[in-house]
Amino acid sequence: MASTVTLEKTTTIQSGDMDDVGSPKTAMKSPLLMKGRKVGEDDAVADKCCGHKKNKFELVSYDKIPEFLKHNEFIVDYYRSEWPIKEALLSAFSIHNETINVWTHLIGFFVFLALTVCAATMVPMEYEAPHYSHLATTSTGLANITSNAMVLRSYYTSSGPSVVATIMKAPRNVSVETDLAAAALSPAPGHHHRVARWPFYAYLCGAMFCLLMSSGCHLLACHSEHASYVLLRLDYAGITGLIVTSFYPLVYYTFLCDQFTQSLYLGSITASGAAAVAVSLLPVFERPELRWARAGLFACMGMSGLVPIVHKLLVFGDRPEALLTTAYEMAMGACYLAGVVVYATRVPERWMPGRFDLVGHSHQLFHTLVVAGAYAHYLAGLVYLGWRDMEGC
Ligand SMILES: [Zn+2]
Image (cartoon, helix red, strand yellow):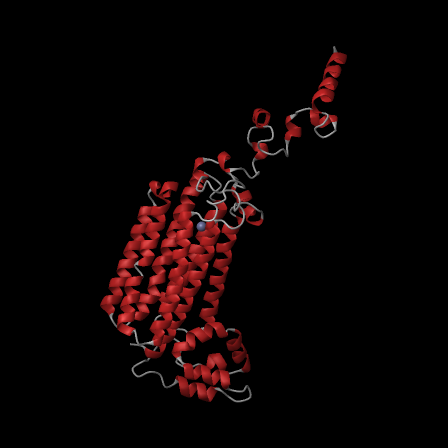
């Protein structure tokens, strides 16, 4: 009896599976030996003997992912499907179709964190005494200014050209303190303290929140339907937050001396932001076919920014600060608009499905455009601060 069994096994190995790997052991389809095979290689046997466990961390194609992960049929492969949180987190460092989506906004988040720190240390505080000695009393201060010339140039373009000129021209062995003090101690008439900082920092926080939520959503939504649902809501709330807080510097500083207009605009945009978050909480909002509705809602909110911008130009059209900030805002608008169009049309992957799965698909382009647009608006914020610090009301 025993010898018969041995004979049968030998026969099976020799006739059926010798070409498999060459070793008789691999020919016997034991559950233990199935590990490491790819999904789809032998699904029937795999499912029967091991269930899903063995292939848990394989990347799968669009037709194998659950409904909640199906957002874009033109991205054909390299999906993570229902991975545990730990593996999903670690997948930030591996290649799949969300890797670049995660990193475009994660890097954007760190860029904005750096810009916030830079602004907090380089731009004078709201309640600081009105002198510029902290910027240039020592040669270290002078070196800092030069290394952060980008920020300061933006800030001082409108706030104190004479101060900048003094700083930049002065040789290091000459005490610039006297000149600076003289320049800074003669502020605009009626201007006793600097303008409020909160709208500018609210915007930076809005941008960081948006970028971080987006990054987290792309990284972890593959975990489960519930995680996807919660994270997508946070992602939409982040986008809304970015749009709403983008209005704050524009409206607050432009209409600093017109409380009614200022409150009207700030109130309207905050209310519509709250409404947009409420709408995005509806389950129907994330259906793939409502892609245009989602893009439309955010685009409408963004486009409503044209109202205060046109208003600004009507009132302050002759001011260089108004023109410069408008140029930055137009750059931002162009980036966001291009981003929304790319997001909604799913170009280029719709032209060549599967070709842009890892690199170059619409969502990555959309992310990059969002970061670029947000940066343009940051520059506008610096100009607003400089303008109102110098001029007040
Ligand atoms: Zn995204």
